[in-house]
Image 1 (cartoon, helix red, strand yellow):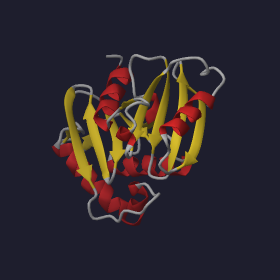
Image 2 (tube, one colour):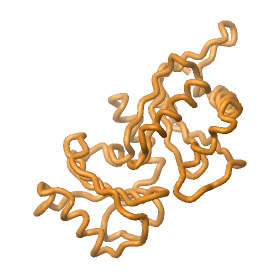
Image 3 (cartoon, helix red, strand yellow):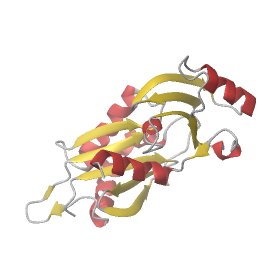
Image 4 (spheres, one colour):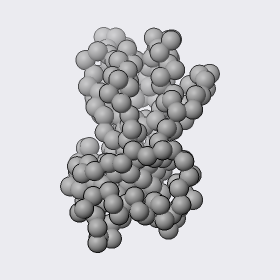
Length: 213
């Protein structure tokens, strides 16, 4: 593999990977770890993170996500770009960074981008609703910047309530008919609100926008 960049996104108990040179998406799952409501799965990797990182590394080499020299015993992946949930905390990003340092190498660059920035490659101004494992995040994006964000209780809202959140998120939104993108649990049940974006599309958008394809 000649490419020096890799792209990743997390869902359930899995990492998904791809590169801009390969349209295939590779999954690596941690099936044996416990699922805890409101907690992202990677927090449960901490107890045996050296073992999990080693196993992930083997899988990445097998799927040619790491272009490894078996003569020099080095990995030449320079950068891994991770799409993260809109409510992720700095300490969680720090753990992910350390985890990939161990899985790949200490010199790799680990970069994070919120998923709400990756739902479209066309619209410069839009709304994103993301139901994560612990809350509903409503974001207003304009010119590649998060202009406003609402962090709300994770529960089922009516369409009228969702529309009210959208209308009142920022004064610039009022009177505009902005495209609305939906991510996460059961968001497909609100088709009149906006367009559902699955993780595969977010990952492909990530590779496209980051490499300038």
